[in-house]
Length: 226
Image: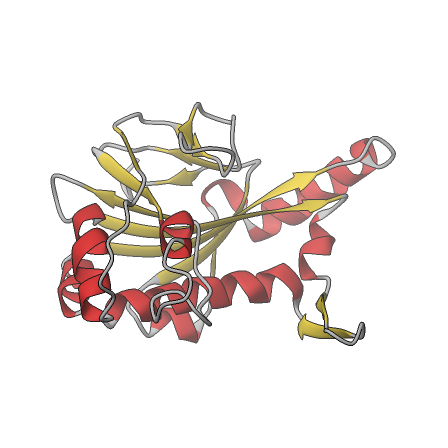
């Protein structure tokens, strides 16, 4: 995937310059992803998204940072993007697009409307359904950008398992830590469970991908087999 992003993507969109796509590799059974620095594959439960049951050699590319390097071009402008792309390097088993996000206080804040301040100082609601809606758009537009490139589309189509994942971290305050933890734990158990909740999202599903949401309290299993 790294080579396709660095070469085929800019060539298809008619962009002359080439940028480096940051990549980490791992064969760890359990690991986390974090947005904090270029070493975005970190120890288990040390980041913002947790994974388990990984039997593969995985390539993890920082897609968000990479596309951001093409600001001012057709690759980047007007398009939202996800944080990471995970692929197995030795086989054609899995491709996973991941967006990590967080909320302070409680899980219910993930659905709070997101506003944008306009130039005249007025505030406009851009995502009525909050971060849930924003993440779906980021994943959808990432798939749209990628699959327009024939070689990348072919690479994706050869993967047996195609996943889009929203992983969220609830940052609990001291005042509501105990009550919020108990309340949100019940909510997350219903929505996320131990391997994420599969969510219906026609925009994403049209590309052949399944869409999941999961709390960082849980871990997403890379392999289907236990």
